[in-house]
Length: 243
Length: 243
DNA sequence: AAGTGGTCTAGACCACTGA
DNA sequence: CAGTGGTCTAGACCACTTT
Image (tube, rainbow over all chains, first blue to last red; front, side, top):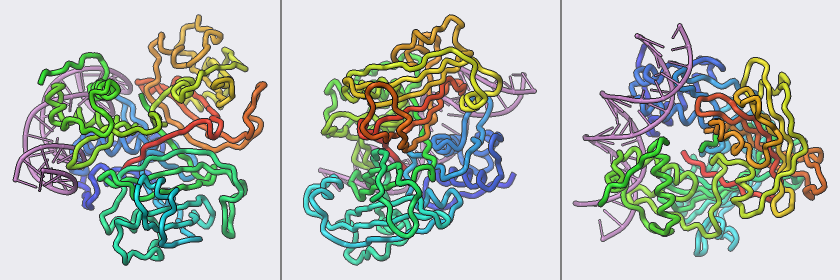
């Protein structure tokens, strides 16, 4: 068995989880099939079993795998649609792309301005704030699947940062400045509102799962606030709950 | 520093998390204060640092602690009451009670029968199945806040088990038989459907956050399936997401 | 009995924070 | 700079499933 290499800067379990997710979507391991044992995966990738377990736990938490003690780890049989673990912090565009769709982002608003009092509060902040405000929609293979409002704390960004540079993921735009969110606190709502959607393509029914989030840096400082309306039934949000 | 003892049968990180939670609610460690370092806690409780980290991660995931690299682990200052997370597995009646309401459960259906093919599939099972089926609504201070359908795998229950005995939490009914779910895989949806509600009191708008769940025993065997429609805006579902 | 995942330890080294 | 959390390893032993 050839040793596979993990090389980028992200934690090993995250990289390994990506590899496994890839091999599943490639059809390397089919739904219902058993994965190699944790020890075999550890040997194959040249990492410790603890690292493998951490990676598999991530995937099990998003419902892609099911682990049965003594029996093995199995690929869940999934239905169509964009499936994602609700507790995995990933950008909307990545969620879409990871499911094999072509993701396109359409902007309605992209501006640099002073935050309102309300917005300052939402960002858990005190004093006045410069922010970058975005309003955009996400298309998967040409079909609209989500609408989003974002508010980025611009105080931490260099003055030269231009909102027009943001084309895809906000995370990708923040990363070069070392401002990658590590955690988000989200509130979940159902919304039925025809005024949410805009643009040439609209969902048939204005029904959405709405995620209201504040993202925090590893230091604990809030960096962005966002509200995303996911078109109902275009996404499958999986959540593993435990005691 | 006296060594504290952890003794029951649950995993060490779970026990330790409970201890820390207790000491916080006792006022031992106040909101905003820094906890002892991971190594100090490990020494104090006579466990490894990995165990301490696992315990603290649990608490951070439900928002009770905030961990800052290099600086320490801090007790979150919960301004407007503690809101527990969506990823904590709790019964619907407990969720309601924890929001500070008086919970009342009204039954529309409570029967013992053979499962349909569809239901067998939902319970991740193969052969024919005896089930207990429930349809009920939850009132909080007299106002309807949720509707729920439940399906309990009755094969594991003694024949004497009477559906009419179920009055509050399904979990409470299963516990005496040692059938306490350890994990649930949930799917989250938005629903706008006037046919969901029933009974004398109905929500003003038929808009719901819908949680579709299969509960699993520690062995990995599915024990119940449930679909709960939470009336939008009656609940605040908080979720901590991380990388 | 053999093989799987579940738990836990001890220790190493790195990255970050704050004095 | 010392002290904190972040990551990762190697190995031990246990509980459970399958053969």
